[in-house]
Length: 119
Image (tube, rainbow, N blue to C red; front, side):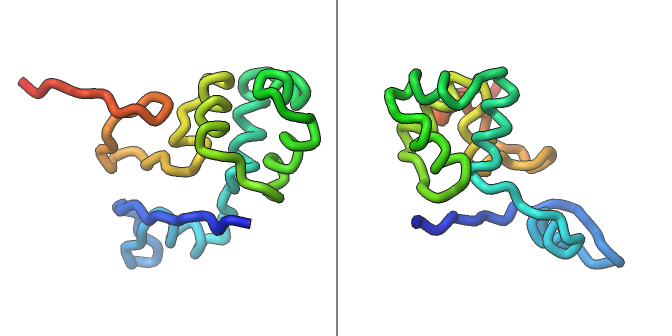
């Protein structure tokens, strides 16, 4: 099983007068992190789709989708991209790469960076 990469995002969260990153604050407060499978399941529900419908769309078995949703196997990046496109949820949110508000992330759609013209 591939190990999940983690990334800390700077933020101005303060707990008992000590500044923490968002990830450290969540851990300090006992807030569980969502796994890739959790996010894939939430995006599936958000889109009003069922496991079988997604399996048919991706050309895989229902059991394969279940292994992804239960974090037994990590789907390929291509599968994650197709999942994001079908559910209408940004790929960065599904993969956990979504930056919190105020961190000034570069806007992306389905993993493709947009070019912004600055006047």
